[in-house]
Image 1 (cartoon, rainbow, N blue to C red):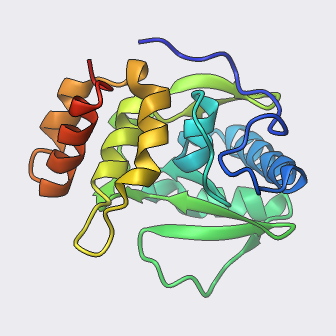
Image 2 (tube, rainbow, N blue to C red; image 1 turned 90 degrees about the horizontal axis):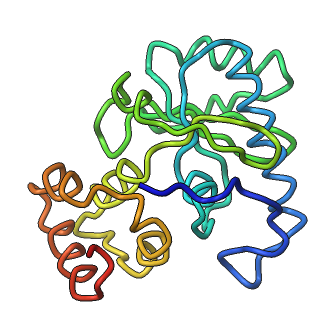
Length: 202
């Protein structure tokens, strides 16, 4: 599967024309800073979410930074980031992630993706990609698509938000694996029919 050239500056590529390039660049600095600290702590992790899509050549549509890691490593990650000046969010209600802040930028430390625990296998399927000026592990395109499709529920099935990602990453995705891993979801089945008809999985 092909992997795009390393991600460059954000000013010339944003998912939303109304987005603030300066804010995006500031959040990129947070992404880089968090990745460096997790690497220094020698913790296995992967950039995921919108920034992982961006790193792989797609649009970025989120306003925070997401990192996947093993649940057992969360305390060490929080300690490493706190030592670097990140502030923990002790009020977050979610039981599948922890949140920290860097100068007003939110970082999610996710240990369950779409309800499934982050595993060593998932972290072993990453690719090292340069994001800004920092080399870091990035979640595989297949895992990005699978986890996105498994978020669809009765009250959330916004296919339109996923189409730009799929268009950008389609050559990096193992579509047979996506089908196998999402076969229990009728929402994923419907989305895959749509992208099949659009010629994005061929």
